[in-house]
Image 1 (cartoon, rainbow, N blue to C red):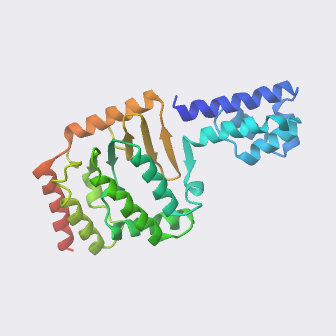
Image 2 (image 1 turned 120 degrees about the vertical axis):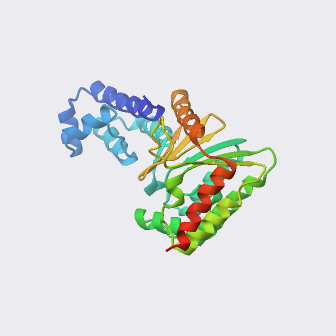
Image 3 (image 1 turned 60 degrees about the vertical axis):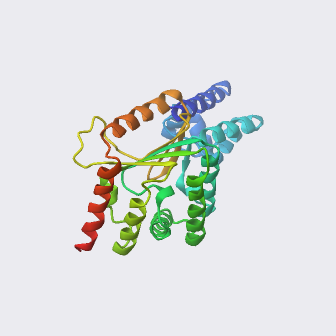
Length: 279
């Protein structure tokens, strides 16, 4: 069980305990709150995370508003592991980029695998611009596109800081994924080809025809072997449980073992770049 699921289950158990102490059955509490009984069950068993509004209503229905600060504190702890993009992007993409930058600034070693896009720290401004347009459109969030692009470019200064190391793995499919116009993608691949030779950066490409022992279902970041960050379509996960970190490290090592480096990786990037000229 992940640390996020463990925290959500613990919160549900605490809410169930409070209901039992009040002498109420689940259906009775649901009636007081105007909810379906199934929602009470899902929250108490950790299958659904409550919102802050849910917790306030729960405490009021039990006549136990004094425990609300404790419940909200548990929820905030839970949200450090799982944060939906709707909330993450409420202040715009610039704020999100700055938050990522703070995490990176406190990290000496960064490992990043991407299965569908070019890593953010290696993106050109034009590629990043189109990524942010798609992200803000999908989540209907603040469209501070240019501010977000500038913040992402500022993040990339970390690549030149002494004492830092960055290891990137890209699935070859990401070199062909059209998330921006052809001209922008051509510039992005040119930028990627120029990464080789940077002292702080190691870049590998996992070929499409590689014999895989693991399935690269999504991208992820590993920070100093202590923190894993995963971006899903709906949320960002921050995983600190040792079993979770070790699992992602195992997948990283399996992908690294079949990745192309140096001239071979450069050849794959050049091939993707040449395919754009044929269109």
